Image (cartoon, rainbow, N blue to C red):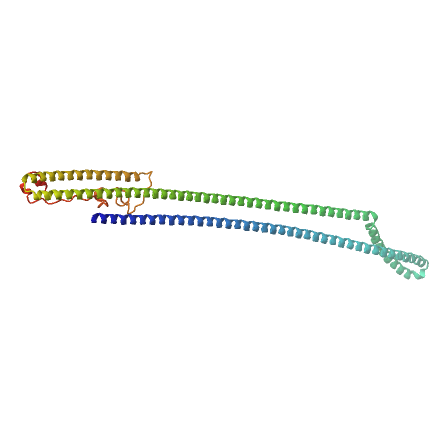
Length: 420
């Protein structure tokens, strides 16, 4: 009874230890689940922070593009204004040059006209002087006494005549040069030159406008190409971000599914562990009850055997002793049969345990973790431990006490002598 009480106490302590180990495993699983949830929360926070940073980068890039486009437009406007100012300055210089040329031509014409007038006045004066000299020469020829003076006057006349001739040629040339036909032709040439210059200026203006329009079109086309390229790049970045976000969502979904599967697996394992614990506790209770019953039966049998032995000792009759010995022999045979039945029952329980553990090791069943509770039946790798290698059972049956043979047993013939 003390041994049974000790075994029961050890069994209770083992059950408490296993319950504490199970509670510790459940606590560790809860801690792992909490750590996984915290990891998922950190992943979600990191994803949100990444999305915020990417949005900020896109906004900064868009603002930089807008500033760059504004700077380019301002630069193009400044360049156009600069070209317009250069064109106006060039036209102003050309107009000033034309005005200076016109004024110089007017001054030259006025000087030429004044020179012509002075030449005409000198020609008239020289003509009068020639007429006077002619008269003096005629008068000198009439007077022979003044021949020398006449010759001198004639020489003067010739010189004056040459001068007059030169002046006349110069005046004639000037008159020819300043004739209305020449003036009209010159005016026509100047008008044609002015018209050609105006046409050229107009053509240059049109060409400048065309170049400016073409440059504006090229700049607009370039800006449009840049805008389209930026839009395409933004679309690609948005698609990449969307794909990355979808991939993150899919990864989080897979992680959530995996965690859910782990939770379900842990729940199934816990349920299977609880069921196994209940099954083993029930079996242990049955074993303890069977052991107590067997102990009671053995105690009763021992009491009966002791009583019979006492009766046999008191009796000195050989027949009574033989009858008692035969009864003891039958009791011994009964005990042997009981032991055989108990061994068969133990083997049947071992077979049931083996079948139960094989069912637990089935691929469709959750694999229980190794624990002190299952270490008696399975190895760390899940293998089966045979009954002879398990160690002492927690509910080992009480052995039937074996009493020594009486001193008179050697005088009794029969199989009890050998058995005793």
